[in-house]
Length: 307
Image 1 (cartoon, rainbow, N blue to C red):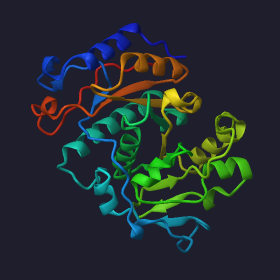
Image 2 (image 1 turned 30 degrees about the horizontal axis):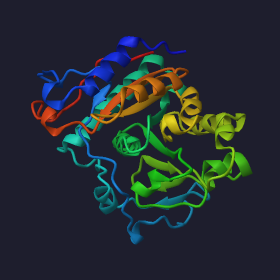
Image 3 (image 1 turned 90 degrees about the vertical axis):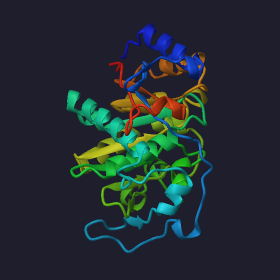
Image 4 (image 1 turned 135 degrees about the vertical axis):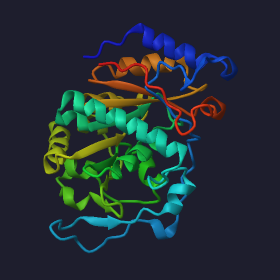
């Protein structure tokens, strides 16, 4: 069980409460107790494009039943998602930096569980889906890694909305109705990226997540491809017990904190709920643009990592 030092919470709260003009700066941008500082502008209202909706495709060789969907750059741009091909983009570089930290955590433990990453926040509107989607796209451009982006929110389906896609079935159908996994996983036009929708909302989702069938599903996803990184976009911590359940099943948890927005009490409450997680990193999101100008292509500062 993780032992969260009070200094982490206190320093994070103090950092977020300070006016932008008075926050201490360093040559690398800002001095922060948070895992990473990302300059973004989420949440975005999902924009849909009819041509980008998911459609059934002919089964791929060796993958009977798996469908292929096209993620359009138009949908990505409309929702503020950065294409990994934008090599000179500052935001792309920032998510590469977060990706490297996730990789470092994988190497430290060298366990399969550390390849499961839960992304959550205290409340909605703090950028968790934005972060999860951008991070998955960053992983998709790795040479030797495949990434599965999982929609852990059966209530809003935000992840598919951001990508301009839709799906009728997902992992809930697998663990509830024994639907074949190959029938719900979506292969994308990005060779290393696959998607796993949530499926339709139903009663007792927290209990389904904590069931042995959910554990078995994650084990199956890992055993199918040992190089796979699984990123789960969960619901906010203070709205459901689901993030706490998922973070115990995962090896890493990213808690998204909105600069100048997330109250200290929310940070403290979220960390308490995530105490069973093996590793929690905080990502500072929606930072002021002026705080990131000094560090040319980068605007991050890893300071503390709790194990």
